[in-house]
Image 1 (cartoon, rainbow, N blue to C red):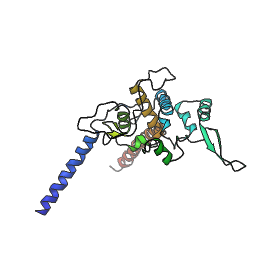
Image 2: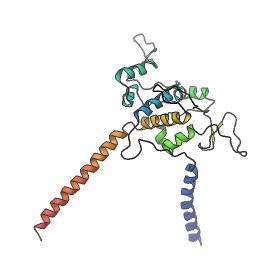
Image 3: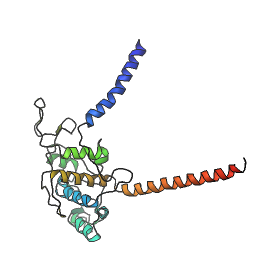
Image 4: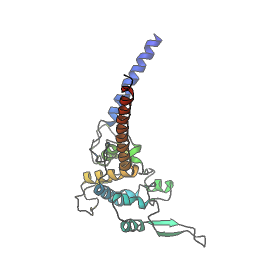
Length: 253
């Protein structure tokens, strides 16, 4: 009897796990991303637009502590543009020869300047909520790019009548619990794209998600190329070994 109950419980748990997973992700907005797949590559124009969205909208609250300004050359910016982007940031440095801390323009070798000096200051400025660092956010969340895109485009909907939204929280059906402290970050024309692309909310979300995907995995293209070369080498090597085997064993028959 006990054994039957245990087997039944185990079967129910195995059936429940996929059901819960599907329930959690069934509402995500699935998108086609150009960098996905074995031969995926990043859209450099979209990456530059996404960086613009991050810099003008997201960077007021969210850090990118694992990126340095010189990494932006991978987005297609030339050396002068990278230096200018770095110099637009103010870096708190020191001590100098007198033992004093000082502010200076950023350099390409500097890591992205954080919007707050510490977590306590970040919480104080955001009603107690700590804005997460975005360096690995695409890899760290289940659903990856689709999850971040769904969150960014999921604001503005009316919550169900039976769902009470706490004070200071915002309804978003794609966020766990459906209540998120972050207010709606993107709207039409939140930025004016330098390349003239129309800045709809959807376009801004797609661009910044692709930028964050690159930030989480900047060497993806090099890895894909290396993977293709390795597979090609193994195929050729296997063919050579098969030919050698046929030649060796043919003398024994």
